[in-house]
Amino acid sequence: MIINLSEQHSLVSNWVSELRCVSVQGDRLRFRRNLERIGEIAAYEISKQLPWEETEIQTPLGLHNSKVLAVQPVLATILRAGLPLHNGMLNYFDKADNAFISAYRKHHRDGSFEISLEYLSCPPLDGRVVIISDPMLATGASLVKTIQYIKKEGVPADIHLVCAIASTIGLEAIERECGTDIKIWCGDIDDELTAKGYIVPGLGDAGDLSFGAKMQA
Image (cartoon, rainbow, N blue to C red; front, side):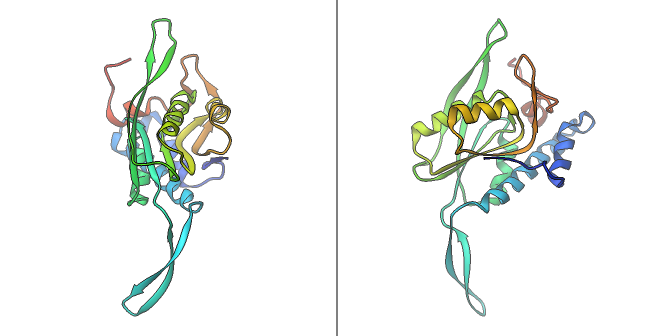
């Protein structure tokens, strides 16, 4: 299931437009905050699909039967670019457990690259709902490898992916390699990738725009 949060106009499409805009991108605080906002909206929408239970709450004046989450999800993100999106979801799923993955493109001299995944820190995953955040779903290679790595650590009940911008090629890669049961929530969807695997029109390098340029190419 793929949900494009900009398919109908909402504040999400306004925030995505600011993420894309070169005249706004120089404000790192605003860039990170817009990613956080998308994470917050995604968390709210995902919460509607999570298992819940009814529990009796004591108020100052009586009792109330309230609907609450049956189990907290696990929020996972890919370092470093995913941190603002992750923080947005953590603002809403404030009792969630967390997982962190180090995955990056290891480039070769011929211009090709492979995904290097060197670190995973996570709680028990069996039977849990896992929500993975990564702002850019380009080729899909890093998220495919992340999902495969997570499934080696446990058997989640459900997996959701949250990204600011996805490419149609990346979405197809996730469905092809990981199955169609994964739910993907996108701030927007673009159709084109460059030869080096960057989304067009996209927004550039989300990690650099959030935290500054890195030495590694």
